[in-house]
Every structure is written in structure tokens, then in C-alpha cells.
Length: 166
Image (cartoon, rainbow, N blue to C red; front, side, top):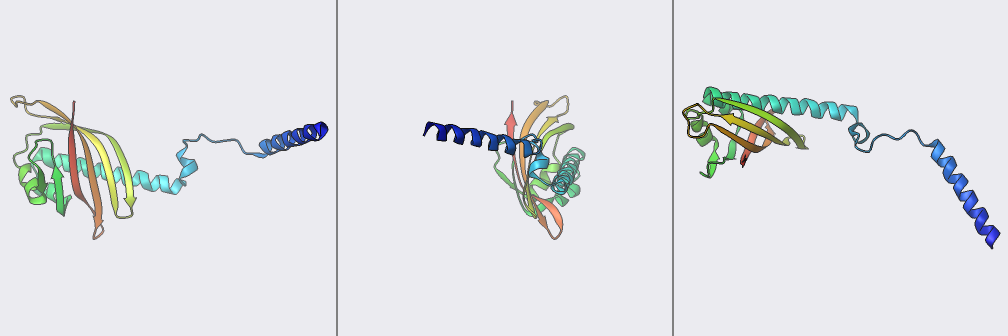
């Protein structure tokens, strides 16, 4: 019995060694190429770049007080919640606030895209806002989440939520 067990262990070890030699060189576990084909990575990168561009256009419109450019990015049933504690805003309310905006400059960063299907995406980022020198509040940093949907072939922002960051 002892010889039988010894032979079994020896044969099993040889089989494992032979199998290990046949495995290809391992790739890093976190490699996105291992989990997503290159075409998916490229498509997701293009989608992320498109959303970054739309969000920059959104903030440029706020900075320039361009109500029409801002409204063109919003879905008709848009809802937004800002850090001012005034509750939810509709598309019309958000567009009307652009005229009274006092954002003199902004920075955007930390973009993260979470595709939710072919017609929806969740975008997360941070914005640093600067206000005019005589403002009570000179700087503000917010963490933002936006839900974008594709309607009639165009991406529109459906929901906006910001949280103050210290």
C-alpha cells in the first residue's frame, strides 16, 4: 500500500509539472485586455472621451451663462440636485439658473464611465469651481454623478447629483 501511494504521488507530481510547462506565460490579473477585447476598450475609451467633451461643454455653458447651449445637453425630463439644499430642479429651472451663475472658472477631473447598456451611461467626476473675488465663497469642490441616456440618437443628461467635498 505504501508503494502504491508513493507511486501515485510521483505520477501526480509529474502530471502537474507537465501541465504547468504547457501553460502560456500568464498575464496580469488586472489586465483589461484579458477581460475585454481591444474593440470594447477602444469603444469605451471613445465613449468616455465623448462624455468628457459633453461635460466640458456643459461647464463652459455655465461659465459663459449660455442658457441655450446648456439646455441642449439636458433631457426634457431632466432632474438635478445641487449642494445648495434647494431640492430638485427641472430642466427649465436649471436652465434659468444659468443666467445667474457666478462660476468664473472650473476644473474637471477623475472621470469614470460606467456603461449601463447601449442607451445609458453613468458618469462620475469631480469639479473644482472658482467664484469672483468679491464672492462670499471663493472656491468649491464637488463630487458629481450624472446619468446620460441616448434619445433619438443623441446623448442627453437625465439626472445630475452633486455632493460637497471638503
